[in-house]
Each structure stands twice: as C-alpha cells, then as structure tokens.
Amino acid sequence: MTTTMQTREPAVLVLEDGRTFTGQAYGARGSTVGEAVFCTAMTGYQETLTDPSYHRQVVIMTAPHIGNTGWNDEDDESSRIWVSGYVVRDPAVRPSSWRSRRTLEDELEAQGVVGICGIDTRALTRHLRERGAMRVGIFSGEEAGMPVAQLLERVTSAPLMKGADLADDVSTDETYVVDAVGEKRFTVAALDLGIKAMTPQLMAERGIEVHVLPADATFEQVRATGADAVFFSNGPGDPATADHAVGVLQEALRAGMPYFGICFGNQLFGRALGFGTYKLKYGHRGINQPVMDRTTGKVEVTAHNHGFAVDAPLDKDTETEFGSARVSHVCLNDDVVEGLELRSAAGDLLAFSVQYHPEAAAGPHDAAYLFDRFVDLLEASSRMSDRAIAH
Image (cartoon, rainbow, N blue to C red; front, side, top):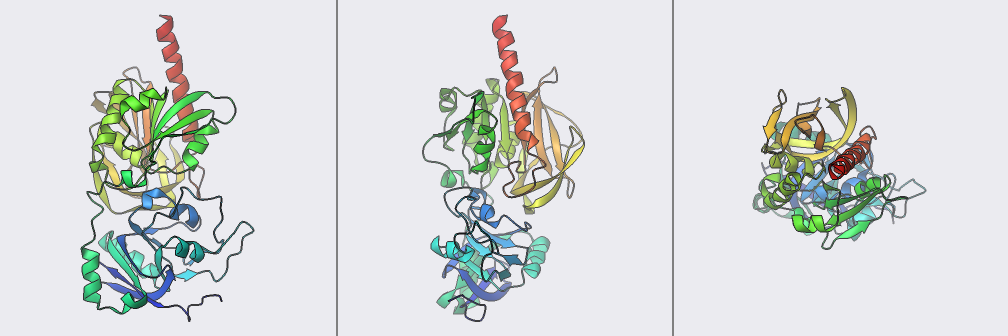
C-alpha cells in the first residue's frame, strides 16, 4: 500500500537551539543526530545522498518536491548513502522515470536512513541562514512522543563538526585502480578523502590511469604508484584536523609533483601553502552557485558542498616555500575563496585546486574544463621533465 501523509507515523525535528518542527516519518523509523545543513539543488538527490562529504550531516532539501525520479542503480557516487538524516517537505507518492528501480523512500528505509517529511523546510532553511548550521535530531516512532527536553539533550550531546576528523571514516580501505579509457597518457595518485565516483571516471576519460589510495597513505606509497601527479578529493570534516594529508601534499610539492585538488582537497592545499581555514556560517550546498574564474574572467554556475573555507587574501599573491600562491576563483555571493593556484617564479602553473565540484553529478558542467586544465598541467610537466633529461 502506498504510504500517504495521512497514514505516516509522527516525527519531530529538534534543533540544538531548542526550536522544533513536527512532521511525519520518512524513510527508516527511529532516531538520528548530526549537523543540520540545507541543499538548494532541485535535482540530483541520489548523488547528494551518496556523496561521502555529507557524512554525519542531516540534509534539508529546499526544493519542496523530492523523490519524483525514484532511485536507480547507476547514479550512486559511492557504495552507500552517507547522510545521517534527510528532511523533505513533500515526498513524491510514486516515481516517474524509466530508469527508476525503486522509490527514494524504499532506499532510505533499506539503508537505515531516518528522515522526516511534511514540515516547513522554507522556515527551517531561513532559521539556519539566520542562526547558522547547528546540530539537529530527527525522532520518529515511539521516540517522537518523548519530552522535548530529553530529545534536546541527545542533540546537544552529539559531537560538533568543527574539529571532526572524518576522512578515514569514508575512505577506501585498499588501493584500487581506475583504468584509462583508450590510450593511457598519464598516471595520477588520488588520495581518497571521500572521493566521488565521477571524479576518477572523468580523469580516465582523458587518458589518465587513476590509483585511488586510502586517506592514510604515505608519500612513499604515492610515489610507489609511479604517479605523474597527485590529486586530493572532496571529503567531510574539519580540514584543520587533516595534518597527515597536508604533510603528504607538502612532500609532493617539494618533489615538484603537479597537484589538483577538489573541495576538501582545496582546503588542504590552502593549509599546505600556509593559509588557515575556517567554518562558514551555514556553508554552500547546491548546484547553482556563481563563481568567477579570475584567470579568465569567466563566471560559472557551479556545484558546491562545503562547510569550511580557506582564509587567503583576495587582493595579492603570497610567496610560499613552493612558489607564488594566489586566489584563482571566488564566489560571487560572498567572496569566499573558491580556488587556488601555485606558480613558479617564471609564471608556470605548478598546482591548482577548486572549492567546488567540476565533476558536478548532478549539476552544471560549466567547470568541466578544469579536468582539461589538469591534463594541460600534466603535459607541461612532462615536457619540462623531458627538457631536464635532455640537458
């Protein structure tokens, strides 16, 4: 029998500042806690749910109608759903897509993801915009009837996202290889800090053989792959905790290896260059964020999922141990650093990173050229190596 809003069990959402929202159970029944964040995407909920960067977060969808395309077996960005909880206003009664294999709620229930529906997600989003991201709990079934004071105590006893070291939770346990499509041109060692499947796929389509390594891999293990360059992926948690990965990246830069980083990889690149990081009030999450590439002056509509950012000067270059660093991309909504690049004294590009997601699954493809820029960097590095050997 199709579940309707009239037949659902009651559920309650409790924010750490005490505000509550009453709705109906959605997905698995029970309880969950995490950081409350909102996502402005109108599509791509399957990719959002399976993005490891959302580990330990309760995602609120600002689009009111969710689940209309169901769930398929092709669009997952990892092996499981990573969100701690899911909040929607109006769940689809039945999916309408030829690719659908089951409903969104069936998948949430099968993977034990506790959710809530039938609440005013607009009011909840406005509250988070004003007060900032905060801890939250969702409670359904018998727990929904418990005193709010008891539920609030469970919420406030949950760990904070600031100071959380989560990369090891979502990383691969063993190294695996994504083969190049067609002729192999380069080899890249990718540190999996919460990597999305689309990222190595897009590299492979450009002739790159990608060796995906665990988050705790050493620089010696990176070199052992025979890599021409290093890549750091997206991922969850506070970049201030990732000292090991920062150290590996600094060793790679000292060795003259080209580098490309996405999201968490941008924050760690910033740290490796000597910049600090900080937590945003409520973060950027969605597929409609405007970013300017300051190298070309082009404005891109981009996909975001980050709650932390790099603290680097927008108005000047910074001399580092590895070369001259500058902010290459900036968010046009709030001037948050969205990209960094490192250049030699001669002006050659040595390494770069972006805070947003050029793989954008689902989302706009405005920034897909960054994978081509990575290939250009690899080609330039190869030519320099050839000249050095010739001399």
